[in-house]
Structure formats: structure tokens, C-alpha cells
Amino acid sequence: MAQRYSAMLTFVINFRYKREYLDGSRPPLRKILERDANAGAPLTLCVCGIQWHDPVRQEDGTFTEATVELEVTDGWYFVRATLDEPLTRAVRRNVIKVGRKIACAGAKVRLARVLWWGAPNSCLLA
Image (cartoon, rainbow, N blue to C red; front, side, top):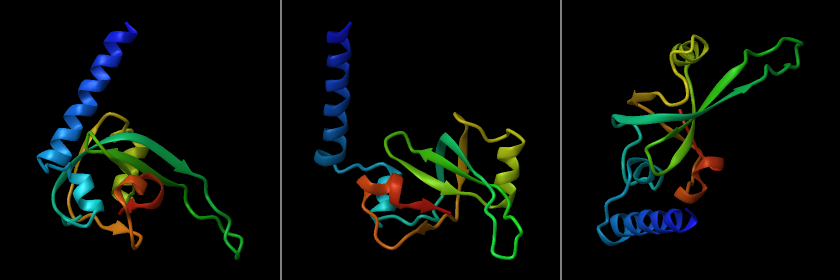
């Protein structure tokens, strides 16, 4: 069993290396994060994680609303994404959940300089 898993892992890594480095075909998120493609272009992503952030108490004593952040993937790379109010409502109503695909357009990359290998911790799609 372990030998079969090892062979499959080697095959996938070899395929990915050939496709990205030898053929020059990069996944959409990598192109966007390397600033070679426009983040606002239409893109289909899969939701692979949902994080809720608790309300924060402000200086005047009021609390902000709980916010939600998605982790989305194009199949190879993943990135965190903040949501606007209509998409947040869809997550609350369980319309958007882990495993669902979402089509997005008009997204923006937040933060100035991003390298694709540091994307999960240092970049947001908004």
C-alpha cells in the first residue's frame, strides 16, 4: 500500500513539474498572485475552508459583526478570501459551504507584494 502511494505521489509531483516549469502552463491563482493576470478576470474556485472571526469590541463600546473568511483553491494553489455582505449571507444560510464551487469576477488582491508560495498567510482576495 505504501509503495503504491509513493508511486502515485511521485507521478503527481512529476506531472506538476512538467506542466508548470517545462511547459510553462501555470494555474490561474498562481498567475494572479504573481501579478501576471488580472485578479478581476472571471475565475472558478472551490471552497476548501471557512473561518469565522468573532466580533471585536470597538473603543466606543460597540461590537463589530462577526466576519467570515473563505479559503479557496483552483486545484493546485489556495488563498484566503474576504467576502462582501451578500456572500456572507450565503455562507450563513449554508448556500456556500466547503466543497462548493463559486464563480467570481472583479476580485482584488490585497497587500502590496505577494509571492505565490507565501499566499495562504500573506494575501487576501477581496
